[in-house]
Amino acid sequence: MRANRIPLVQPLDTIRPEDIETHGGKATNIARLKLAGFCVPRGFSISSLSFNRIRKSLPEINKFLDRLEDEEDFEEILNLAEKLQTLVNSYQIPEDLKSEISQEFQRLQEQQIGSVWGYAVRSSATIEDRNDISFAGQANSYLCVKEISNIFDAVKQVWKSVYSPSALIYLKNKGVPINLVKMAIVVQEMIPAIVSGVMFTANVVSNNRKEMLINATWGLGETLVSGRVIPDTFILSKNPLSIIQKEMGAKEITSIVVASEGDAKTNTHTTPREKCEKYTLENHELLRVAQLGIEIEKQMGSPQDIEWCIRTDGEIVILQSRPITSLRIP
Amino acid sequence: MKRVGNGLISLKLNAEGELRYITSVQEVVKLLKEGPNGKIALVDDAGTTFLAPVLSKLAGVVCRSGALGSHLAIVTREFEIPALMGVQIENPQEIHGKHAVIEPEDGTSGALYIRE
Image 1 (spheres, rainbow over the protein chains, first blue to last red):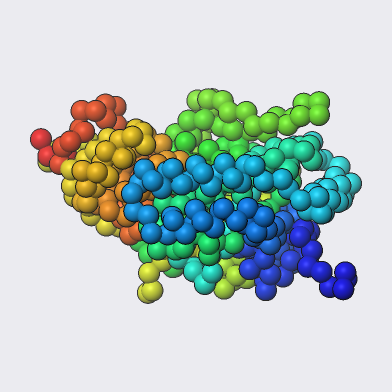
Image 2: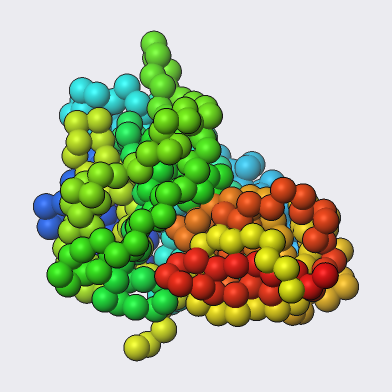
């Protein structure tokens, strides 16, 4: 029996597309890209079964979720969000899960000589049968997490963030019952990026699938997705691949990973003026990023919203890929 | 109409309505009680998640930072409302409460107009 037990934690490269219900979109897509030969960070996924177990061990959560379902009053929703988050906070991660996480963590540490940068702990949510929901930025991510005890803390914080006021309201607005959200967690190695960006393999602004749109900024992509900088914007035509429009962003701040003895953290500073006034990507680099986007779209079978970065050695690393949620049928 | 700024537009759609400069969740609650329907929210930060309760009812969003890949741009697009991102507005209080228009221009650009 033991041999057939579903593992709670799995290395990313052993996850298959059919595991989407247990490992969520982020983990499954990264695994797919890895299998197809793209450069992705190493890591593991904590299955959504572990998230479901919280509700089994704290049945009060269900009571609050039921109340939330019919609640329209904003202040009451805030109140329920706080109660739910307090409950998750009180949850003790079960020993079997801790031990599986520790094992995978150990394996990563051994494989990886350069783990000085720590790990990113991110949500990998799946909402049953819905491809029009990005859940973008609704759950928290934690960067540069190093010690195993901090990984445990971060995992709990990501679970907790599913019940944040903004996540609950986003789902309510979308008409999605919160109990349909399946929440897995990806733990992946931090990439000390020189340049990071987001790429839509269709022009989401004009709804044009023959074009693509790329945003890029210096350092880590966190400043870009959280909207704290105005990044460079590039529009390209896909066939033949060529640059249509370049718009320079101010890239006001830059976030980088700093590692010192036994510790890693992100450090945000004002971008030096000469870098504000310079494009993050030379034309040949831009085309290289775009070409990867086209290949990923082909691999995944639909236009994608891709987070990528350029590592210190010049390699382009794909951090995540998800279907574009807002394209209208042509 | 006076042009007060330009930025990157998340969707090629026009929007028109009363502009509200919103900086806190308390102001969102206030707007929610008044009725956010058809209003345009102006915010400082594209990481903003506090707009969530009103987002589906707004006519549009203007943001003083960010770009098309920001979470705010992605999420507003799902609700099919245009967000004008990375707009440099020196004094947002000045246009609070005025009638505003978001208008798409060439490519991914868009402009913000205010009726004086």
